[in-house]
Amino acid sequence: MLQCLSGSSCVRVIEGYKSTWYFLVLVLAYVVYLIFGALVFSAVELPYEEELRRELRTVKQQFLEDNECLSDERLEEFLARALEASNYGVSVLNNATTNWNWDFTSALFFASTVLSTTGYGHSVPLSDGGKAFCIIYSVVGIPFTLLFLTAVVQRIMEFSTRRPVEYLHRRWGMSKPLLGALHASLLAIITISCFFLIPAIIFSVLEEEWNFLESFYFCFISLSTIGLGDYVPGEGYHQRFRELYKLGITFYLILGLIAMLVVLETFCELQHLKKLRKIFYLKKQKTEDQLNIVDHDHLSFASVSDQAASFREDKTDLFPDDIVSTSPTATSNGPMDH
Image (cartoon, rainbow, N blue to C red; front, side, top):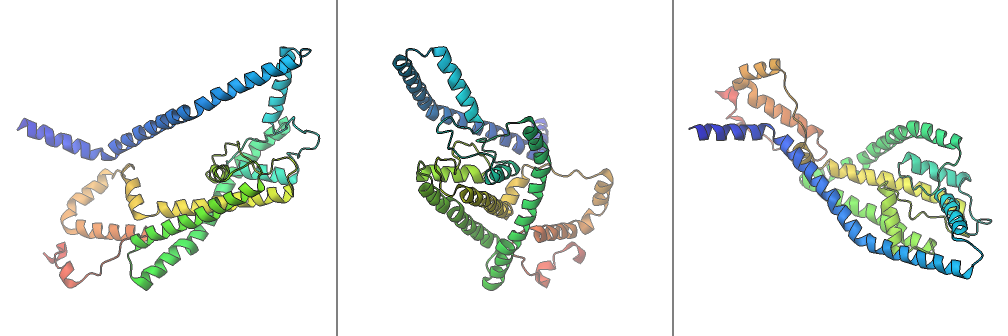
């Protein structure tokens, strides 16, 4: 008897804190995923780093042997200065004829990467005034960008997702969850083609040192706002139509980011994903007064309120389940008939 009571109490405790247990599993899975990524990156990239270090040591030693008048300390000083300038986007290679980092189109490109939080890091403010303005500009501009993107995505979703799904639902009679999943998949394919595959082909042609994989890698790193900065277009020497090229890339990043947000929002509003998210959320706690009202009126109004609540939830879903028409037979078992 005690075992039964203890077992049932344990079950009630587990059921009462189900969302907490799910959340702890989610946190553990995320930590494991981070560790897994670190192990894979370390295993793949560490050999290349060791090889590059050996090559640099060999080149440096050979350079010192060929130039005996130059000391190791002077060479180290020069390389440190050159690398510091390179971190600010100023290269020592062909420096007299290279492109400027702060002409209007380059500055516009930099502003777009700051406001979209991409932040390639290939060019950064050099002066104290520029750094201070970057802080103020970002504090105001990033929330402004989020507001702008939210408004644009909401309007695009109305014409690209909600109305087409509603039209096809009325025209073909298919369930909205199924239509929503098919539409989201088709939208993802179109977005990948228009903002990843085709631009990758274009970048691989315009950028002489990029192959298709590197170009596709740049598109993904940019539109996901990761912005590692190891590949930045328009920074090659003797780049033709550089100003126009930079302007086009700026518009590409903005449009691509909007397209990515539309796809993500479409998938997030799928009913199955909504149910998956809800298992990690905390349930709203009812006040004592509300609980007393529910206890007194449970027999007469519980099922009616459940139906009304489910109806309101279905109205808020982007892709709700099909509403089955009620009939006298279906409603004859309600609590009001007793």
